[in-house]
Image (cartoon, rainbow, N blue to C red; front, side, top):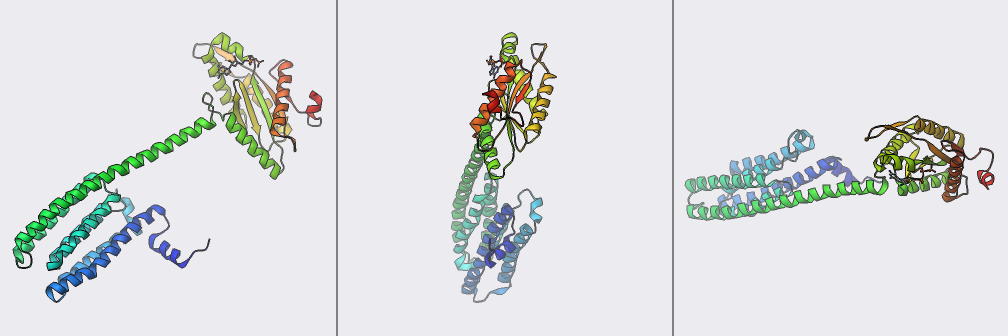
Length: 382
Ligand SMILES: Nc1nc2c(ncn2[C@@H]2O[C@H](COP(=O)(O)OP(=O)(O)OP(=O)(O)O)[C@@H](O)[C@H]2O)c(=O)[nH]1
């Protein structure tokens, strides 16, 4: 992808971390607004006093410089050590103080500060909690009240006390209303965030339900079918061997009948653990249905698959499952193993594994029957 000079500039200004970019975008917007307000205030002061004077320059340095400091603090990562790395509350408090200072300088055009003050508080709608919104509104009201009182006392001609009282009353109505709206936004934001988390959790659960067998935690039949389809596609693209084995617990009905269904479930769970432990991490053991399991051995030629499943059979035969009712159950498995042949369908390979399993059962159980490496198993079984 080509990097345009504009994107390079944006990366330089905002960095590349998406979370930091979001914070810096917000602060840059606030900084731009502050920079745009400066000439307007200069105009108001010129109209009111015919000259700009040192206080206005102090306001300009304080306001624009302060916002630049916020930007620097966030851009450098310095703010990450604070509870709110966006510094939202502090930035809003600072902007309120700048607006109050501007109000004291603006003279007859000071009413222009009120929409700016609303705008400043609206920045909090994206991030502030209800409590901070109320606190900042209160802070603004107190600060403006103090500035209005001071100006009415010191310059009653430009700031008539009754007019200032009217201004204050207007603020006393407007600021709590903005705080209430911000608080409501905060509740909506929290609800949305909770819903997003619930949805993500439900999706994760759904994925588990859709792909895992509830009793054993192994991949279920649907998931195994998908994995085998994938392996088939891979073997067609980059030819390699893979094998499929059907593993069936011997005389499992007897366990259920003599020890109960719960004991049968315990045995299934123990078999699943032992089976997984006996296989390689790349092999997949899945519950195919009932007491029948399926093993997919990707990228594995028949002799290796045979050795792996023989090891599994031996380890299961050595297993002793302790059941809740007391006592121990021993179990064995019969295994039918088939190597996939190029050109065959998965159903054909599975059918061959099934026939070998049938053969293993017929020959007395607790054994592995597999394709002969040199002989076509389909021919032998026919
Ligand atoms: N406890 C329990 N039993 C199950 C579950 N799924 C299937 N079964 C039982 O597994 C038994 C399978 O019995 P059969 O198909 O006769 O096979 P078997 O007794 O293992 O005999 P062979 O396969 O011929 O060695 C049945 O009793 C089923 O009820 C399960 O999730 N839990």
